[in-house]
Structure formats: C-alpha cells, structure tokens
Amino acid sequence: MASRRPPPRYVVRPHDDHALRRRRRWLGAAWLGSLLLTALVTGTLAWRTTPAAVDHHELKQLATENDTLKQQVINLQRAEQVNTIATKALRDALAEREAEIGGLRTDLGFYAKLVGGDAQRQGLDVQATQLEPVAGSRGWNLALNLSQNAKRGEEVSGRLRVGVEGMRGNRVEQLDWPALGDAAQKDGLPFRFKYFQQLHATLVLPADFQPLRLHIRAQADGDAALDRVIAWRDAIGDKPTTQGI
Image 1 (cartoon, rainbow, N blue to C red):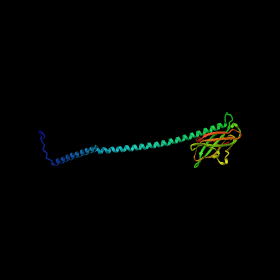
Image 2: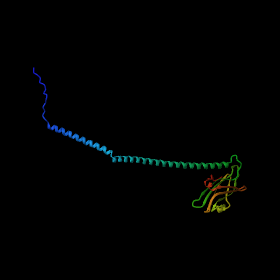
Image 3: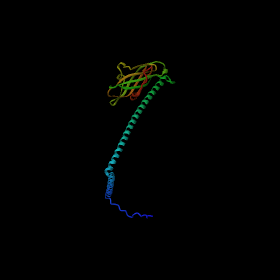
Image 4: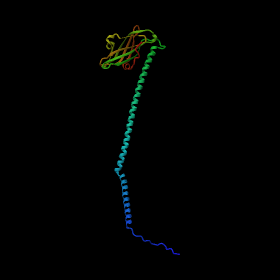
C-alpha cells in the first residue's frame, strides 16, 4: 500500500509587481477621494454657519413675513371700507325710515284732529307749515295747512296773512305781510274749504334780515282770528300733508 505524503508546509508563489502597483493606486485614489469629500462637507457646513449666510437667511425670512403682514393690512383695510359703506347705508336707511315714520305720525295727527272723534266742534287750526329756500335768491316758498273739525260740517272762508320776526343788525324787527307777499294779494291769501286746505306763498326777505319766527294770522268770516307763532327752524323741517278738501 502506497504511503500518503503530507502537503508541503510552505508554498512558494512568484512575486506579481503589477498587481501590487494596481492595489496601491486604488488605495491612493480612495484616500484622495475621502480627503476631497471631507473637505467638501466641511466647507459646506462652514459656509452655512458664516455671518453672511445667516444674514441672507434672516433677510429672506423677514421679506416673507413683511409680504404676509402687507397682505393682512390690505385685507383689514378692505374689510374696514366694506364696514364703513355698510354702516353708512344702514344709517341712511334708518334716517329715511325715521323721516317716513315722522311723516306718517304727522298725517295721523292731522286726520285724527280733522275727524275729531268724540271731541267738540273746533274752528280753524294750522296743522303744518313748510319753508323751502328759493335757489339763488332771498326768497322762501311757504306751504301750510288750514283745517277745521269735520264735525263742524260747514264751509269756512276768509284770508290768511303771514309776518316774519327776526334780527336786523342788533335789533328785533317784524316784517308784515305787505312787505313780504305778492302785491296782487296784499290783503292776504284767500281760503275756502269745508275740512282742510293747503295754501302757498312766496316770501322775500331783505338781505340783512335774519328770520327767527313766523307769525300766522287766519281770519275766517264771522269768527275770531286764529294766531299762531312758529319757529323758523321748525317750519323748515315741517311737512304739509295734502292739497285740500
């Protein structure tokens, strides 16, 4: 039986210079690449933490916040404008409703007094007066309502005269009808009605005269005269109701 030889303890291989050089070149390139990568990462981190980079970032953030705040201010201004317009429209509507209610109350009082209810028969009365300025002049258009209680049931006629009390300079002065009215109606405004009638006249005031009060005197045939004094400012805001019956 043949004996089995043990493997040799030492193996001799031939030396390969080319493989060794390739390995060294690869190791050198890997080392150089690691150095370049480390320098690039270090440089990037260092730039991001420099004052210039921090200032640039903060400026960009502040610009964004500034644009946001500007838009918020614009939105608030628009909302305020809408609110102002809506408030004005509401106030105008309320003023119109108040004026309408005031007119209805005046009409109600007029007709209530005209009908008289359970009241006793009444004579002449001035229900409303209204003064309106004539543009470009010292003239004023006057409209007023005369009425009597419907229970009276009879026609009344007569004449109405108007005077104006006011200030001229430092003294009180009263202008009577002949100084104010139409020369064709120097005796006063004629009236004739059973229930009520609206009268119209134009008053012309002197340039240096400041009116304060209206003096109204209605003289019905066969009856005592009716005298009324109405503040000028109240007559500007009053409203006669109807034309007359």
